[in-house]
Image 1 (cartoon, rainbow, N blue to C red):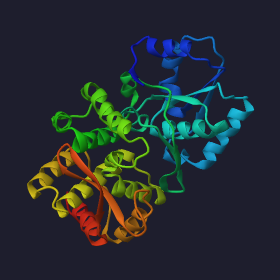
Image 2 (image 1 turned 90 degrees about the horizontal axis):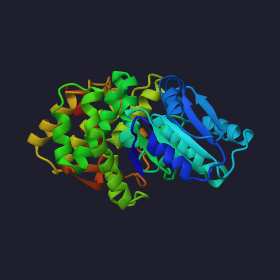
Image 3 (image 1 turned 180 degrees about the horizontal axis):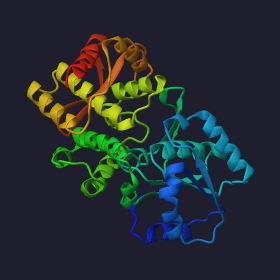
Image 4 (image 1 turned 120 degrees about the vertical axis):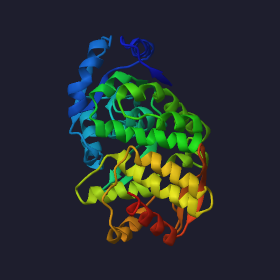
Length: 346
């Protein structure tokens, strides 16, 4: 299901020869079209006809309006049920492309070729697809597995530092919820570079894949992958509404800091462990500008979280490094305390 590509892309070429495909569509954004598409086309060995579809980069493109345009393009070029969509890009491309493919003609096949660290370790793996509803993250979507996920770590060399750091937040999360050794290895890195991070990508991807295989439709253990995301998605949506979007991983890092405080507040971890984890996350991520007068707005955004039921706030919280429990109910007062903890942390 997940393959790390060699420099000749031989695994991809073998896959294409084994499939019955009528036509290939390659979805890119402006950045991956420039940096990554030439590498793909230079190594892809096939006589199949293909079309390249380019969209603008950025989370603001992950909308139903963009999906509609892509459905129209697929119809215009007569994509059929034997067509294959390549999603060549970061989390926006794999989320959006997977959603478009899984709904066009009730589903065509797609493969993910993530080009960002966030895509490789998180967004491209696990079969969640979707678009945002205005500023609300991933509110419209499907569960649909790609035919394959191909990883090519050399793509990371094209990333700006902020995007590398963004993906690193999800790797830290994987360690915190499921693998203490992974957490220790990652937090031993003094500087974040593509060369330093690459050796740990397969382990991080494997953690997520292992959890997804146990619970594809997120009825139990897969909920642990949402650690840091209840608060983090609210923060990300807040900055989208302000029209000052931030990288996904920056929001998730802030969300994890709030949610480790909630773990402490719920007597799941000690204050010593809270301080230790907090210090290590803050080593890599600067503070976001969140003021007390923003807290009410953030709470309202959290109420939209897909894990919640009625007026109850449901969280996945850690009860140790490498261990996480889900369906933990937290009061509004505790959440406000966690936001205040974050505000005064740096």
